[in-house]
Length: 78
Image (cartoon, rainbow, N blue to C red):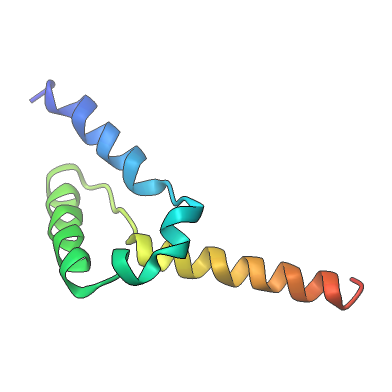
């Protein structure tokens, strides 16, 4: 069991990072097939460790929303 902890930690770190490339290729990363595969992995991780991992598509949406809000604020002179 203790041998799995580093592996789970690594998968947690990988799933938390969102790169510019992922944002640009949202159509690929957020397709039904990939979302389904990631959902199975997230559920398995949550059941075994109790750690909830957000979906990358939700994270991409949050990042894009924040960037758009910052750009709108910069354009309005605020």
